[in-house]
Amino acid sequence: MTKRMTWKILAVAVSVLAAWRYGADGERTDIRSSVGTPCRIPGYAHEIECGYLKVDGAVSAGGMVDTELRWYRIPARARYSLQDPVIWIPGFGINTVERGASMAGALKRLLNTRDLIWLEPRGTPPNADEACVPAGAKHLQEQLEPLADADAVKRCLDAWRLRGGSVASPIRQHAQDLERLRDSLNLQKVNILAEGQGSAVALEWSSIAPDAVRRVVLDSPILADNLLEHRAIRMAEALQKAFAACGQAEECRSAYPDPRASLRQVRASLPLTLEIPNPQTGRSESVHLTDAQLASLVMRILHHPVRAVVLPAALQEAAHGDWRPLFGLYALTWPAPHKTFHWETWLAGFCSGTPPGTDMPEDEFAAWFFFAERQRYERLCDAWPVQPEPELRTPEALPPLLVLRGGADPATSMPPAGAEVVLAPGAGHGMLAYGCAADIVYRYVWASDAVGEGGNGPGTACLEQVPYPLPFVEKGR
Image (cartoon, rainbow, N blue to C red):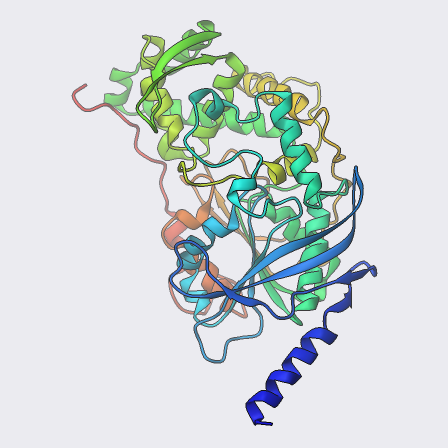
């Protein structure tokens, strides 16, 4: 027998012996994850490693469910990589396979020496064709609300249950599954990069396994205490900021003198049935627009200041009967037709949040946003079996924690006490899209001291000096 064959037999034996382990909560879990297989993801030129984390004991409305959670590892480029990989935790609903290549591009400096690993949460469809809302260009009415009726919600609920969705807290469940994965891959220490609602998962994981988490970076965190009332107020502040920016620029003020009046006029015309070209297809379509749907449309635009500053122009055109600029602006928030959003897992996260209260904010536009979102919550979550999140734990001793936050982002929560915060004053949601944010993450993971001290590469000033965008004025006005 050759030496190569001997080592191959030993490797197989080790992988078989490692197949049965115990999960983080003590239950026996069949984990086929210590040895992955070569695979590829769209847009990435090299082979990566894929595997399965098979877990039992997930309780759904239909009883006990065995499920396999897919995990992915993009290996570090160095021959001898460091043993503390970066675990990426995106928000619920993100298709990680489609986005994996862009994340690898953003984190290329980290990938020189550290693996990038992620795990799909329970309820994720195995492929785009089996998603409860498939990919493809959609009618404008579907873009306004992909889950407009009870049948669509039920379809997503059934698909989520079928793939191991649990009535337990999705945040806590995913944190426990990540700890199972860390154990099965024999990782002693990990670094975490979490985005949006994935930040709540990261903090919960840090509570479950504090000794396993080396450093944490939260990008635009949405945490469990992100109450609808607070979000509505922040959305109204973001809208007023866009209007105020226009009022402070003479050219914009002259072209669009009263965006608040334009918005009020538009709202007064609703509900309304429009004939308008679909920005993705160019085909004329009929769409019925309500006041609540307009609120959701505007909130999506407000996540990014570069789009928010166009609202005064788009609202004035809509008030004059031309809705194309507003829908064109809204279309910038849509995924490409060939991309898939996992509404199954998004719904689980959305409906497990704290239920909306009954106290309406006093501000006119905050009350508008609050009422629209409360209606949406009640419609989508009435039959959803996930209970609101129990009180999630904040780690008694926070690991080194960096928060990247946009000053004009209406969606994020206040950072945890004790976190190191980099605030980009004029930035919106999703800080990795801004210039040197990825280099700051790289330096923070590498450093043994505070992010602003030591290390190499740029400091934090490159984000701290991000200005609010200039107001938009149509050329020729």
